[in-house]
Length: 273
Image 1 (cartoon, helix red, strand yellow):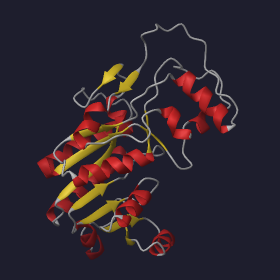
Image 2 (cartoon, rainbow, N blue to C red; image 1 turned 90 degrees about the vertical axis):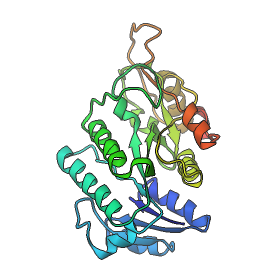
Image 3 (cartoon, rainbow, N blue to C red; image 1 turned 60 degrees about the horizontal axis):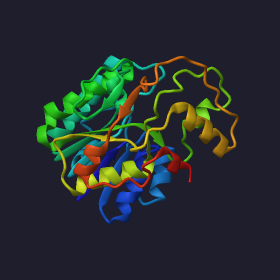
Image 4 (tube, rainbow, N blue to C red; image 1 turned 135 degrees about the vertical axis):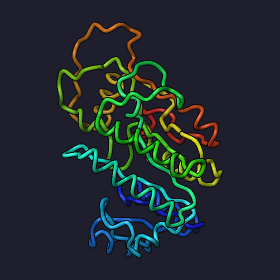
């Protein structure tokens, strides 16, 4: 089996190394020659590509000629040209299909649910409120329009893993809002295992959630995390919210069952051990 990854980044690179260790053929993209040279030292085949580049090049044809293409390109939060991003992603997906890609997995985000409250399942309505969330909603639809049952979408909660934890961004801040809302986090290792399981089970034609099963409050969790990491405390504003106002809770139980996946980090409290 040949697997291609568009985006050798924080998630894509360790995913590629995991696939490589399983003895499967892997190729991916990076945006710089320096990174390409670095990846070559790790025996990873790489194509230079930035979103918006010529998608008919012979180099990219090598990427598209695969059993599974994992599309893992985020729009970014700074200076996002939403129209251009969606168009370039749409063109890329259509070209992949034309060029022979058999199956495509799009890595999306739970931000497509916006600011809804309560338990969110895979069938909950989409109500994105950010430009990024709106882009992901449109691209998800393109995936199924083009690839139909050979397409899949995996919506990830907040990512935690090597050198990445949201507590680092909250440390030392004061009057942080929504301390009573629950956290929705998932560990990098569980994402990699979930993607591998989806591919091995040929579980395309569906939408999946990925999030830890436990959901402590933001205040309880981030104050604990800052203390555990030796960071300045995160201080939340005193609020008089109703006890039931827990914000959005991403339920990934059904997705884990479909994928036969047992999370290694079922609780955010496990993610710093």
